[in-house]
Length: 267
Image 1 (tube, rainbow, N blue to C red):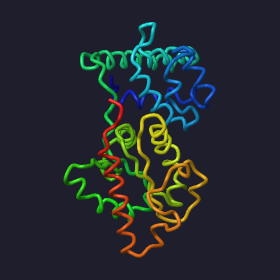
Image 2: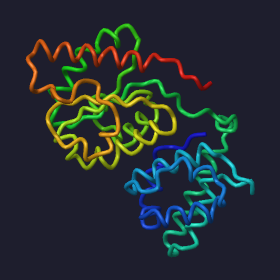
Image 3: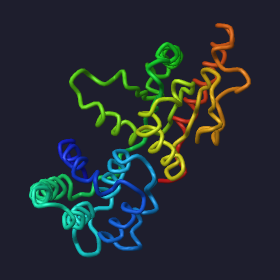
């Protein structure tokens, strides 16, 4: 099942005031779906609100219908609607009809599978764009031979809804390459929008995290410190000679290829 980007854009402002913290999120999900709903085990409840709502909508759409026969996403909206003012209730009523139309079309009834995770997603700070180009150059032979499918935000076309493009790319990621530096760790967007779904997928769906140590920073003070770096953290890339950097990029490229082409043990 799928819903349109337009529906997601309409959901965000309606749901934000009611899903601000972990307690509210848990309470509404339990009221709508019951104590035993598997969605609670799939979501990280303490993430920033927009990231949480986007991930929650994906999981509810994936869940489909609950025991009452209602669509899970619609059931949640109906519960939250009771706590809204009349103006927003009218907006929810219109949105509920739109969602039911989208989720019960002939193309949706067949219960489309979850998006296939087959891409390499690169997360980086725009201040480190020179390093992104180095990685892209090293990976070019793998891209040309179709051994990997690479995604970074330079592929977003002018005029596109960039947040939706990033959300879709995150959902399709099999490998996440994190280009770690003080710039990377200082980015609120990376910390709030990109890292939570990637780390959650690493825990629950087998996504592979490969992180590149660009320059000295406090990585051990973040969740990234729990993952093995792609190379020796005693020698950040910016401390190496050009020849030594190329050797490290080659090693990283081989690790990306191995992770991206590995066949999952789960069907």
